[in-house]
Image (tube, rainbow, N blue to C red; front, side, top):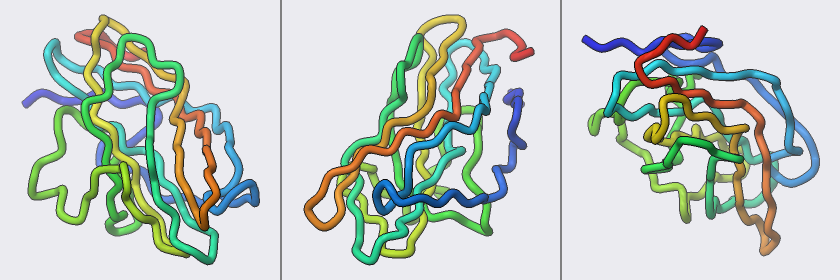
Length: 165
């Protein structure tokens, strides 16, 4: 079985931690200075589900777009909003998420995060170079007729057939 080499994350997920703020209902943009690295065999994709959004507002928020920030050598194939199970994020994993695992997942465009709710953001990315990287995520959303953008700087690095170290 092909294994995904992880740096900075456990393969089974990341323990949910909080972040608060007042820039919008999802809080302010922030930098956590963390890089998640995956070593994948040629031709494989990576599921990147190490980030989440929490709606601190009193109204539902609607996601419109989640993209990689400043991607190089990575193409985004799919983006989902998913419930968080057992207080664990999906994590960084080799390949596409199994269909059985995707119960309750929604395409991110138009997905709703209820007031007080939390959703895991999961992107499937395909490396297009021997080393691909992105500077984080850009999350566009609306709440009560206002538009917001949240920037999260958890960096992603994907190496094809080479160690992350």
